[in-house]
Length: 240
Image (tube, rainbow, N blue to C red; front, side, top):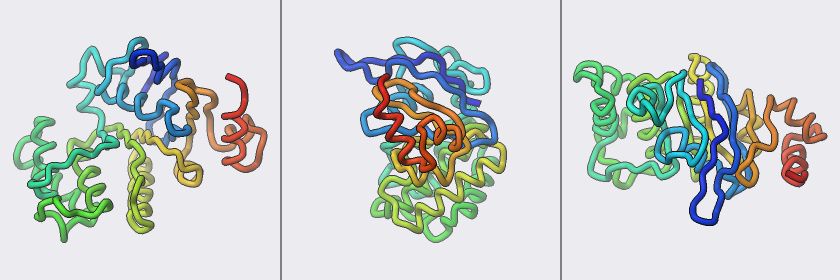
């Protein structure tokens, strides 16, 4: 479970996150939804410890990400927006390297890496350097390294951004599978149809604040529309 309490983060005169609190529950997919510039990525970076909040706290399965970062991060798998792959490493080497960073022994690293290669259908690219990989192939590598330490929570920052139709479907299938396996899945998106298809719970952020949260049906009710997209737009237009 990921618990976020009264997060605030500013950069100079810009208040990127003004007041964000929510809980992403185990065995459910929680979507962080909002227009560009709403504060989604800044919120996620505080959740996985890349940024320290000016105020508030984040707990991963009860462990504070800033007070006990190594313990908290062992419970968390992250697919950040920048990806950050090493061009000269192979797909397998990326997964093994991240397993080593998480303290896994050699046999465990190799076993889990092969299992993820099979699970993500990466056999044909496993031992190729990632330089020249397609966006979909790069995404598979990123998912593999995020899952190698078998975390109970996973955070995905716009995981289907730039993917073709086939790769997008694979990512959606993986998200559903992770939920069915009992993980906490938190992902950000600005694509309404994606959120509608995947999410058990939705958190809507605008101007750095949570303006609505609930199941898709509850969001429709709050936004006074049977269509999720129209409800979302109605909520964005309501006074904060």
